[in-house]
Amino acid sequence: MTVFQNRQRNGEWRYDFRLNGVRHHGPCVDPVTGRPARSEKEAREHEALARGRARAGQTASRSISRPGSFTFGQAVALHIKSQVGSSAQHVANLKLYGRELLVFFGADTPVAGIGQERVDAYRVHASEAPVQVWRGGPRKRDKAPGKAGKIERKRSPASVNHRLNCLRAAFTQAHRIKDPVSGQPMLPFPPEVKPVPAPKRRPAPMPDAELFARLAKAPPWVIDALDLARYFGLRRAEALSVTLAHIDREERALRFSGSTTKSRRDEFARPVPGGWEVLNRLARQARARGVQHLVTWPGRAHWRAWLDGKKPKDVEWVPLASIRRSWGTTAKAAGVARGHRVHDVRARYITEVAKVASSATTQEAARHQDPATTARYTAIAGAEVARALEAVPRPKKRA
Image 1 (cartoon, rainbow, N blue to C red):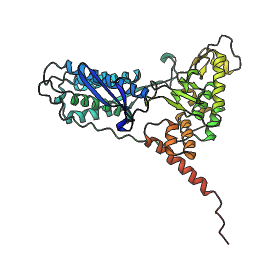
Image 2: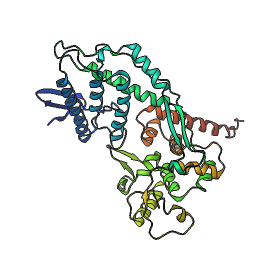
Image 3: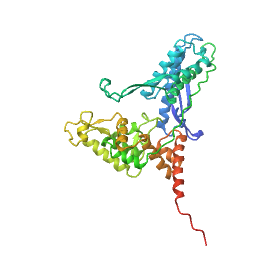
Image 4: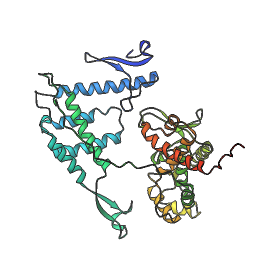
């Protein structure tokens, strides 16, 4: 058995295996959160990730032809190959960032020859690179109204930091690889890659007045998605992707598989009062429509007729790719000048939980990896409680 529980270390799960004659052993820890495995199933998942990292490291070591020849292109490729267990979208994004890095630094450039000055120059270059954004929605460009077209803006700090993180990870891979002759790291002293300061947006829970005003103008499928966000604290993409298979009737919750979550472990989205009834309603609706997704719409060909009450018989209910445009339309229809985001509906769920639960419970309900993220919502909930207490009559003094 390559996975076992060490009783001498308080039941810590550990892995111990050999790969091409090399022994690899250590604790079964989630590489993303640093959280130790809590079951044999999780331990086996962590062990599989460790095998993937070990296999990628051995492949990279064999690819080095001679001392000092390790290139920047090899470092970037090694970082991308090491993403065992990552989502296809994440790997695709890394390849996008990698292509830009290779153009700037050069794929054949020796990684040891990239100095701090060159790294700082890329940091400036990435921050000032223009981004073209299409305005006009999904309509064809030749039929878009006059306001549609391309606009140019700079990248957001978060977008720049994604690229800098990829660069930093490539240097880390080069530092880990040993010269086959000297045994020294291919990059003994990695340059410092400083992130770009990014403003942290404070949570802005959706107020009931705005939410109800916009729901009154929203199509039924948008209301269904927002109900999942309101009662289960789902993110926008999660609400649109929920299917009948996600319903766990024993737990009375939605179960998300570890293959689809950021934490790489199974997560439960649990409802506030009224949520289970909403979920059952959406489940019955999905079965009646003959689909698996809980949130569906009648498609481009029939949605207007459906809203007009005609309800065509040949409707094929399909999943929604996005509700961004519909959400913006509800703001205009309801006369909301500066509307909240869909994510702020989830923020309301989290702050309401924070009012009655501990920080640890709130973090579990919100499915946050970082307690610091939950703390931002807890602080807002605490401020609301404090304001409410100010309205309580002062206790009478004892006579």
